Image (tube, rainbow, N blue to C red):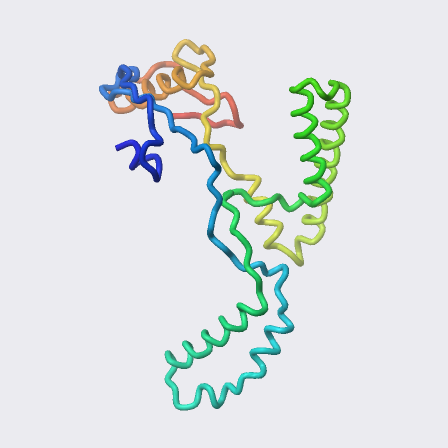
Length: 236
């Protein structure tokens, strides 16, 4: 059952253990592990590579077609299918395809090839430092250089977006909306005794006790609150 719910292949969920109940809840906890495949799966989906497209040739090929003769005596639906066929043929010649990335995240607008090289150098330096091949001072200088360039690139991008906001509002508000996305994880909580709770199991018990008190009407004098964030509270 867990294979069907959590994965798309059989045999990836293992070490299933039934734990006790969570707090005052009558539901049982299930602990399991999702086994990672030995070889990384690559996406086989393809998409149009518009950056390498030859739109001049595409316009020329579509302009050579005698549309009046090709669409003569045809209805709206049949004419649409004829146009679609010619467009797809021209598209295959003028627009190459590329493999679609399986990552959900997009490259930030301030990231360029130079910064990608710096980030790669930082990762290689970290790997070398962990293996004892790179000195700590060298690794620290590499990290500082990469961090400084990333900060400068971010600042320049934000200045450019703010300066051109009247002419390019779409890019500006897209950047702002990406910055305003909420976090999916739950920050540190305070329990009934005002102690800070950071572990996942303890946070789950605090939340379970809080929501149980909502339905039973027995609420504690101390309001459970999230300490991380500005003014975010649970159950006020």
